Image (tube, rainbow, N blue to C red; front, side):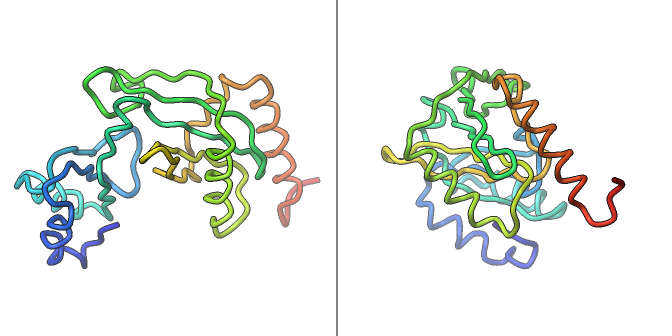
Amino acid sequence: MLTQADQPSIAALLAQFDGGDVVAKPAIGIGAIGALRCTADNPTLLDHIAALLAEGDVLLQPFLEEVERAGEASLIYVDGEYSHAVRKLPKPGDYRVQDHHGGTVEPYEPTKLERSTAEQALNVAPNRTLYARIDLVQNKGRPIVMELELIEPELFLRFSDGGMNDYIAAVLAAAVAAPGSIE
């Protein structure tokens, strides 16, 4: 993650990518808005990062070609328990998996390794979460975490038979358990 204080070292950081493709995007964002994929040595990237930094922190990630081929797996957890998963696929020729960019979503059955990876990511969250979405992508045959979504993520509840009921029950239980809640 880059902050405004990092600005003088951005060129040195980009040099570490040896001209490979990277994705720069706002650290807090939605739907790939503000995301740019290009080679790390492209002068446009420095301008893009500078513009993003004027608004807030920036994530800089190496681009993984597997996103274009296999998309991302999103594993959904409600009240710390696995609920369901989807695979998000980009339209041909794109890397963005969001539907407003032409991507598609389908039900998905994660592997044991994907479940284990997602749960390890969830376990490092500073607090127990009411809900979470862990986005995974394959890298050299192993799942890695792209994002740990804890604040207002799309939970794809329409792809789960009991997901909506589980979510409602967790929200109601959290509301009752909250200090000062109405009984």
